[in-house]
Image (cartoon, rainbow, N blue to C red; front, side, top):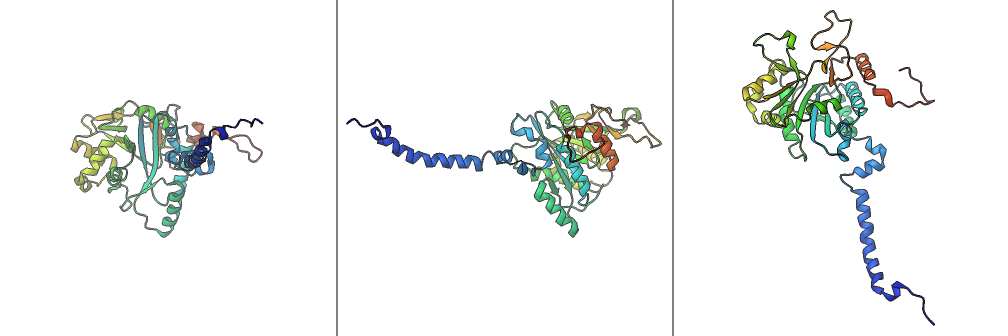
Length: 325
């Protein structure tokens, strides 16, 4: 009687091969699911986990799937107790479309946390968002905090690969539109670069008057930050308005020669029509082609600004809520 054909009978080595290979295949599959590409697959499979990434990572989320031409670190100098402002900024940046071809990391920066209440609440923020830098300094406005930030960043991120191309210091009352910021930085030098809002404004500038980038927000190339970190004597020259002091450092070291003052039409102060001085070369009404709006000192100004830029356009109709926008 003819036996039915079986490849396993005719080729017993196949059974042995399967027995040996199947465990390795399963092990490889498990490893791929558990440790894929710095955990990005799990974040994709688990939306709740993905939401726990920092606002910085969310802004640069396209970095996972697209070519990144350059990377920017924006350090928002703020206070440990400014919880509401950090919460607002996280929302404002998370709801922006990711910039094309750029990764922009937003991190909140303050000095030593000395209050027990702040220490507990800041620790909770770090656990959830991991977007805070605590510098070894005492809180101040014009007495070295900017120096402490720029001198610390190259050391803190020395091992990061790929490294940042630009580092920016910004206030917590300015709103950057990261897509427009990326577009204006694209193509600019990666060495000896200094970008921001140039003061005094053209119409107010006097012959021979020193120019500097307004402290609202300015960005330098990574090499400039490294130079600040390596030039310890700058730490002895930190008194006075920090934006003017920063410019003085650059002049002393012959740095920041690639200077780019942003168009006042695109980077400006929020205009409150109740102010007696009203319009100026650095203050005007909101415009669509904005890179950054400064002087958002209260929730009303933030709300007006975010509404103008259609930040709430993603709100879907639902019977669970009704809002008059």
